[in-house]
Amino acid sequence: MVNDTFPHLFHNSETTRHFMEKLIIIGSGPAAWTAAIYASRASLEPLVIEGAVSSENQARNALPMGQLALTTEVENFPGFPPGDLSRFLETSIPKNREMMMPPHEPGQRGVSGPELVELIRAQAVHFGTRVTGGDIVEVDFDKRPYTLKSSDGKTYETRTVIVATGAGANWLGLESETRFKNKGVSACAVCDGALPRFRNKEIAVVGGGDSAVEEADYLSRYASKVYLVHRRDQLRASKILAEKAKNHPKIEILWNHLPVEIRGNEKEGVTGILLENTRDSSHREQAVAGVFLAIGHTPNTGFLKGKIDLDAKGFVVRPVPFRTDTSVPGVFAAGDVADDRYRQAITAAGTGCMAALDAERFLVTTDVTTE
Image (cartoon, rainbow, N blue to C red; front, side, top):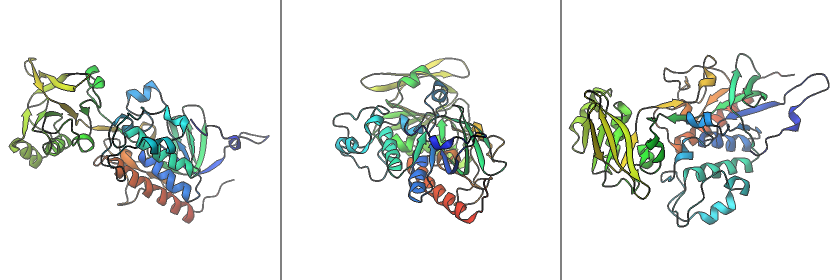
């Protein structure tokens, strides 16, 4: 990690004191880094706590960079049309960060998820953003200045906070699913559905709620056929969406089935899915070129429980429409951590901008007295 040591944080001769931050941003995806760009340019001197690379974070889909770390091709982020970015990446991403992302393949067209995050990160650092690692494991929002404690034993005091810790897609937990991620297995139809891999091919969507039906409908624009795999005999989706799926000419619902294995090979990626009938335990294999998971997302808000208002799914509640304010004054939320609907890099970046502007205005208009 860069800028991981802050000599000015510590202490006088009497007692240990911590430097008072104006703004701390928790997270490392497009929301966090966009917030850092705007905050840095507004002279807020933000500190980004970007999280730790650990087996625990990997298990709960909470590694630094967020969901984009698992995205090989990004076709829908404005400003990155298909083209050879190799020279641009060489001159834009610091050498010590190149090891943090997969190599840019010769002839690769467009930008990958890790490359996109690294470019936004480099832009934030260019404007003076400071960065440190560690996961925030405890917060005290009862009084200002707010106190944050990290997994590496550090304590921070800050006047404002932007929470941008994201949300991880829920996975089935199959070994074969992990093996074929980005090779035909995806958790985002809008992100990946238009890729050549899936065009005019048969694909499967796993799930039975509104999101699953919406994903199946979206994918039907590109696929020749969509199998909607659901473990029950009726959809959990709203009635109007359920009827739409049942009557869609390109969607076939496979009732009472659970995926037990994703099948494929290194050259082609996913070639099929093995399903188990939940009633009689029989098996069937369905040939598909892709499997899309639509079984929900889990926001990375465990450290916020009881400290800030969360909804029933664990997403941060933003009570003021079109604002990033939370239930705690001076604490703002950006990106997927507060978004259970869109979950796109561009919407996350947009709310990162909004959160930085909200934090700046809060600092200007609020009289915070510190020692």
